[in-house]
Length: 500
Image (cartoon, rainbow, N blue to C red; front, side):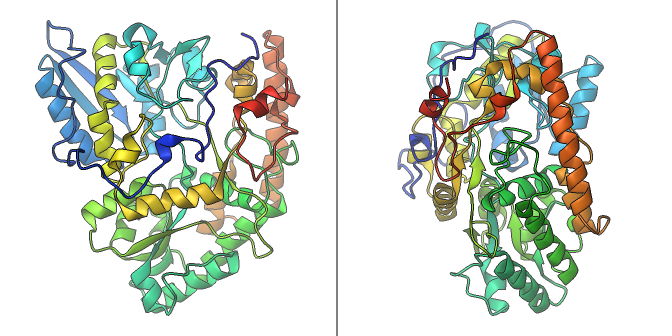
């Protein structure tokens, strides 16, 4: 494998027409109750004995639409029975590992967030999709979906992203609670001090019935995203594409920009602004309590919007950019390239039926249903433009346009870094564990654990690079260094080429 980018279609939100969302739902789009399986009979299921296709993921916000999708799928293809298992992210990571080790993997399942595609394929988790999909299917997607090192390995496709990649650490706020606390709902806080103050005022006005902020505190991943993304606004240069900073070229998780984020969260803990259930609930549970008006702020992704519109139609809420340090913004939210999501199990006995499921799932009808419902931004061409009509959805998109920038991916620069990621060992406790500890009160001062974690990450990365080299990979620490990166611009294909 060489270092050349294969099929590079790296796109930013500003250049990606798929995310050109406007509040103009097409009059020809079907309502959620009717949309789902495409009406045409193309790609008919293989006929013969009945088969059970097992699908597992964590797409909880999609649940009512997926149930309708499965019902329609089984009606159209009566020889296929879908056995669908919905878990939380944390449940999934443990469950899928156990299932694979025991030889009982589902036919279709997504890639856990703590594993790279290369690691999964090397471990025998997935099989290539190419024998079961055609050009018509691949051409449905926007450019940049199938990239070597991300969704492709050695020129073969192993996974398909779930949705367009946008940051999931924007802030939702309850306008009614703002008014009751004497805050202006049309002027949400912009700085750390303003944010902390607003959370405290909402808590005081709530008198035990509402609190300043709520999170799915038992999900480590949510704390990790908050720390990484918000520190990037403060100039840390950290992002999930690389273990090290784009600013310092080292793991500087103890930098001032990160410590400032921790101090903000610690301060809100000391103020009593966190909902008392925060540390014992998942993100979906936090979303439900926010929908009931029990908190003024919550950090999550765009998928919340459709859930609230469906389950809490009277909720008066807005979307705001994350607050920035009091001394000013020094960076942008890191936006990644499309991420691998679902794939077909290496041990699946029904790969043709599994591929048929993917073809129907990524049909225009079903993807339009999800966009119209406010569940996600789709990766199919033209769907967002024709199907989005919820104001907060457009608001979310507009904020991302202003606040996020596409960051470079070391693995896109050099696909052989897959060998490094395969050998890289996550450091524990990680950034999410430490921030969780701060909010729970288990960790009093983040400085020492963050410094220790930074040192261990640098050592772990060096060890992974050395191991990959010993196995024949042409890799180097400089593959993680991008001298032509600036935080205020999207990193595009021509920027990778300029490094050659």
